[in-house]
Length: 163
Image (tube, rainbow, N blue to C red; front, side, top):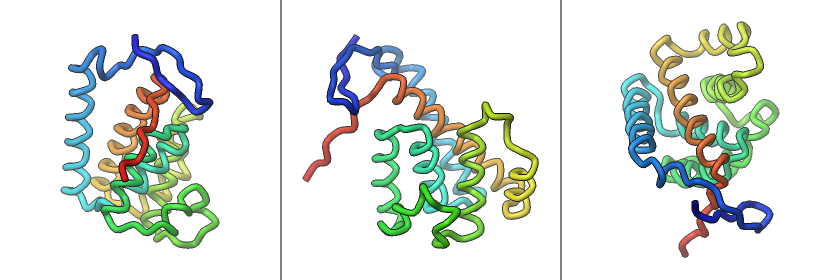
């Protein structure tokens, strides 16, 4: 088992799942790439997908994935103001109807243990997205939530930024 440092600056030993069982991690990574292809094929652009990835990661308290997807979001052209508004998307007014629907779906999938995707959320999101778009976004939520659980459980440290 390898040591990991987490937000309190403390070090402890945790199993690093991606290193201990790389075949499982590689399968999840391949799944994630497939989901990305499904998103692109079904009209979910990088901007929308990255907003969902960041929001799920923030809700799960996954600093590692939040950092990774913030970097991808900036490459996709999302500005800093928009990125800082994600946690308060309902109140901010900077997001489109599609983005709001996607962020709401991200919350429902992240908190799936609280009764699934509520009917009102399903209906609202379904009125904005086609069935294919809804499915693509749902798979994106499944994918990032899986990664979040691996990283949070393993307390993977956020690597320092390279200058």
